[in-house]
Amino acid sequence: MIFDPASYWGDRECDIAFTELFGRFPETFYKGYNAQYPLSEHYENRRDLYNLYHVLNHCNMFGGHYLTQAENMILRLELNT
Image (cartoon, rainbow, N blue to C red; front, side, top):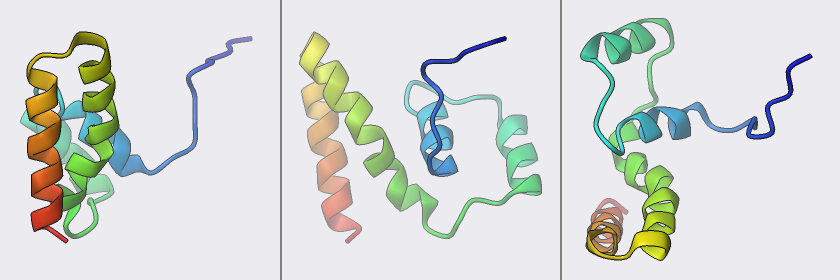
């Protein structure tokens, strides 16, 4: 039996957004993904919201440029509302 303590059920866009946070997967991954299950309209506007938690967590642990990154993400979110 395999037990994954980090498993969860959530919005698939959160997982895709996380793949873009610290660089991207190869473009073939995104093309293949979208061919099977296209992302919803305006996903790019929600990507910062999905990744903001992770950036704030890194800001809390490491400080530095993560604070600026979080502030920039929040500004973009404000502009997209």
